[in-house]
Every structure is written in structure tokens, then in C-alpha cells.
Image 1 (cartoon, rainbow, N blue to C red):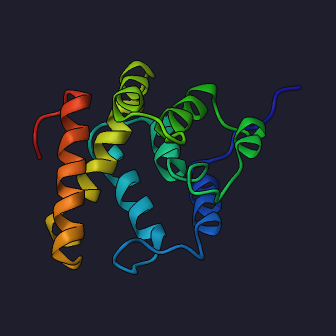
Image 2: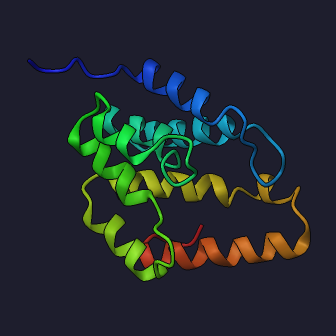
Length: 151
């Protein structure tokens, strides 16, 4: 018997609930970042599988949802692969992380949207100068490793 896949609305609701207690570095509700990444994927021509992955892109990494949950979830294999590709592993070099994203179909567009929102000048402006400089360099380095143009 085949499992009925979660709708985008269901994925969004799950992601919002899983990250409900979480805030970003500026103290904003984390779901705002997830919404921005999902919207960015949609604006960049991403499909429903990529939009679902955008909603879930930090869920396993942030322990909001378990890897077991993702494995069992009623999602396409491609969506799961994108989420896993974007999940950083402990002590993983950035080059390995970038290579996994580049070689996972559909993942680069989701990561590009994530980086675009993370590097948004308005979002970075509310952070202290040291954090802003550190993150700006980190995001630029990742863009370069992914072969994306500078933001």
C-alpha cells in the first residue's frame, strides 16, 4: 500500500510546529526564515518537492525533527535527499558539505535560497558587528564553494 504524501500545507504546519520554540540570531521566530526560504525557492522556479525541503531544511540539523522521522515521513525520496544534503554533519568540512549539495538533485536551489535569506543585509543589520562580519564571510565562502555568484 502506498502512503499518501504530505501536502505542502501539512509540511509547512509540521515545520512551524517543530521549530515553534526556536528563534534566529536576531531573536525573530525561526519560522520566518523557513517561510522566506520556501518563498525564495518558489520565486526561483523550484517545484513542490524543493519547497517542501525548504520548509524542512534545518529540521534534522536543529534536532527539531529526527532523522528517523524524516526517513519514515510521507515525503518523496527527492525531498528527503535534499533535506539530508542540506543537513550539516558534525566536524564536516565546508567543502564536503558543498559537494554533497552540488551533487544532490534539487538541493542547490534550496541552499541558494537559504543563503540569500541568511545574507539579507536587512537581516544582518540587526546583529553586532563581529557576528555580522563573521556570517557575511561564512556565507560568501559557501556561495563560492557552491559555484554561486556573489550576492
